[in-house]
Length: 193
Image 1: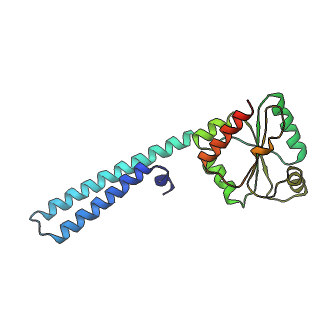
Image 2 (image 1 turned 90 degrees about the vertical axis):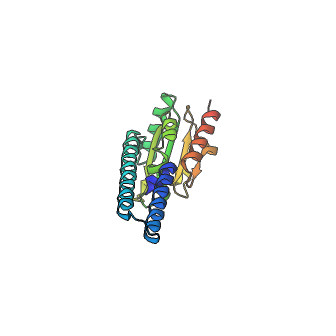
Image 3 (image 1 turned 45 degrees about the horizontal axis):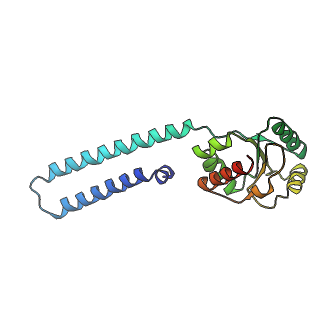
């Protein structure tokens, strides 16, 4: 069902097919038609063709969505891991995005499944060194990292520029959909040029 809501044309065709089928069935049942059997057969053929069309279209879109590879995040466990990753990114003159996440956080999961893999966001994220700090375990290292980064809510997305300086105004706490997050990344790219 999620696939249908992502593609409004398919959803509209599905609704039209359902309405046409229901209307035709209602008409056949209410009105005396000399060849009811032929109309029923015709309706069955129309429903069958619509089903085949929808099934093949959905399968095609699923295959296309699998071709888009989700960005790969490097896992960090501590402040030391973060400092090493930031130094490495600064040496490569790449900006950094750190996703501070937890397994129980629904918006964090939505970022991973819906926002980061979306084609226009994934293309923008290719320019970044992508880091992930999963603090679900709430270990002393997790707590120290959250304290160091001043993380008070989930998800928290932190940014660093090409030189390894933290872009504090770019910080995101909470959820943004793919289009808003793409716009946010675009604004960050303009500020760091």
